[in-house]
Amino acid sequence: MKVLLIEDDHGISLALRQALSTVYELTFAHNGLDGIKKATSRSGEYDIILLDLNLPDMHGLEVCKRLREYGIDTPILILTADSAVLRKITLLDAGADDYLTKPFSLGELKARIRVLDRRAGAIKEMTSQHITVHDLTINGVTRMAERAGKMIKLRRKEFAMLECLMQNAGSVVTREILSNHAWPNTDDPWTNTIDVHIKYLRDKIDRPFDTPLIKTVHGLGYKLEAPRAVANNINKGVQHE
Image 1 (cartoon, rainbow, N blue to C red):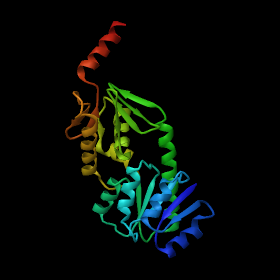
Image 2: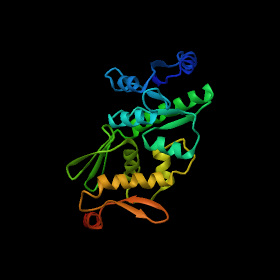
Image 3: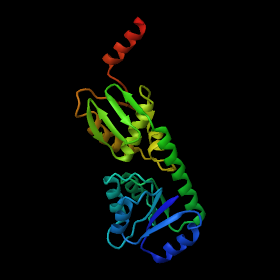
Image 4: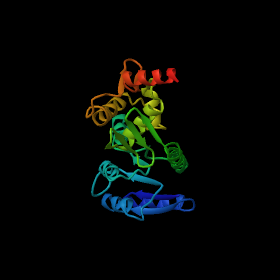
């Protein structure tokens, strides 16, 4: 497994090199710009990115945002000394997959890396095919959506949530299920974060089109379903056959 460590503390870098180099192929970057350059280079096909927040040239949060904007979908594990819940929410919203609060044990770090690697592999396998509901299709390989012939670019968490809704089309999906799908390994309730990302999805998936697909089921969660007229036509066709 290839791991990119973006960390300016040479002591931590040395400790991680000694602990991880026998298992992982490590590449080091000691500031944000160098980390972005290595992560986006043609040779920078990493399995995991370990990202410290306190970098000398820019905040790690900005590094994370830029990587996602550049289309880098490599799992990002944030290393932070801040244990505040609001900070964690901000990190996850920026595109991070997980976080580890300093000081941490090397055993826990290795476990988090293994979990992210397994999940990345499972996502690739699970999303290897197209899913279509009404005139909306998602492509699990490109992580793009298309509706009525229009291509729609989604951020990683937006895609994960839409994928979960489409896999359960016609059924209510609770906020807890959406949270577990898009933000695994997180015990905190991300209710507000889920609602915000649903708004982002509606801005891209529903509002530019005549027929909304994402429904709010008050007190329960959300549901993605085809318009009633379309569903009725489908049912009539099945009955006729």
